[in-house]
Image (tube, rainbow, N blue to C red):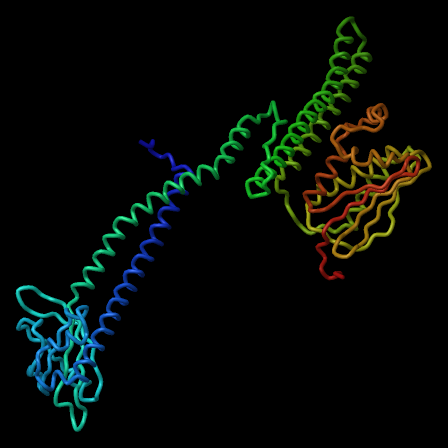
Length: 473
């Protein structure tokens, strides 16, 4: 017995659906074939009645009022079940065959009217008596002018037709359930065979865990939908393996980044506690500890921001004008570059508007400008520009700094990656700035790219969909 609430398996449902559809098709075909058989038998009976009626009329059997024995001799034994009679204008019988056994044949008003027009009439009637007998009846006019004075009625009982139809129904009653049972069994076997690969895929997928993401589903090489499903699942497992590796690497890097300032903080406090210190020395320890705490706070804030951006948390969207935003970033960048001998200036800026979050876009541009200032020597320059390219707003941050090897371009956007670790630590960098920039640009449906060469500076390019439709191309 199936436990309550448990759904039927796909194999069972496929078998039931297949059997149900097949049953409906068989019933429709059986009903149609029964109708066609009934129609064919009636048509054959009508042909026989027409033949007998013509023989009766042409041989003058009805006019001579002779016995129907001559008719049977002419037609042969296969027509013995057919009977006839000759009637007057009002339907009174003038002669006929003995097969009627005294039962009168009805003479309908429709047959009389059609007979006066010279037309024959087919009818299905019931003869009264101890047993009700259905009869197929043909009424033929003998004369037409000035009006048919006499008619020939030829009939045959439905016994053979009913017997044939009953035999056909009995055959259907045996063959339909038998065929349905065989088809259901075959459908169940086919469903089982078709779903066996899915069962194997399920067993393999259940063995794939976070500790072992190297397993993959085996392709059968048939190129069918199941192979396509296996390829799709394998691609998903590849992405999961990559994501888990990224998470593990990110966690290890984050732990390492947190450990460094915490170790420095602990070491400074332990040294201060080993001996009696002067107030100035304690203040120096506290000042150094405060710097490490600030570094920890910045790191925690960056990690939280990066996590929110990658989780796709919705942020407010509003029209953001790029020109005032770049002016603001330029002002902050100029203050950051003060004392470094680096010039921060504004290049060509077109009036552009994008849809986005002003605070996060400002954070992205500030990160790029701060990064450019850090890696630009004294006497160098950093330039911001914003131009239109079709339906996109293109923001660029160029510097004349140390640049980087083109082979390292893709790595710089990964969290905690530093191409110059010692220098990055001296400047207080955590290796999250460019990762945050890329995540911010991605959440704004934009792209971030970089062109750089060793000793020739770098150009970071942000492309965002423009919200200003008045300047479309």
